[in-house]
Image 1: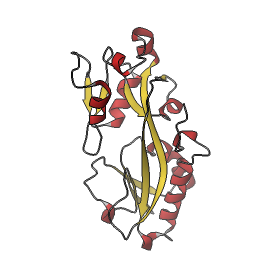
Image 2 (image 1 turned 135 degrees about the vertical axis):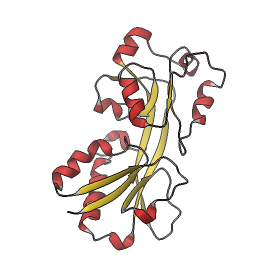
Image 3 (image 1 turned 90 degrees about the vertical axis):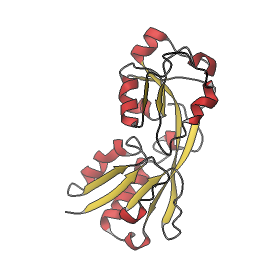
Length: 209
């Protein structure tokens, strides 16, 4: 049974398209490792890696995969009960869910709303993007999420604020594995999953969901 080892910076980066790969290669076992810590180099243990910044190993084949745009989201139930902020200042009147982990730029929140925050502003702080996803979907508060989240769950509502956040993501693999069928299949799947032509959220410019 062929196996491919792939590392993702978070479970919401590509994991939602795994069924496409499984349908194409039903005998393939995809071993996924979710890792946000930019200081951890797993390239020696992986077949394919997806990272927020290019790895330092000069022997790897590296290419830009896509641009991820982040914007605030809330559930429809939250919006119905509390409304939505229209500025960074008004965000302080709401509940915000924060992702904090090595490699996550948590300081961005300080830049947006400052450090003097009212009680209850941060009901949840977690290192799990999946926990944030479900917390927001169930009305716990507002969080920055990838713009494509609106296409995954209809109960999520994008919040229009005068700013968005974007990061480029890259993929890499070892040159000696470039002809391995499982690796070739994995790379082709990645390119399809993040094709900016089919999915405009991955374009360099922001496209509202």
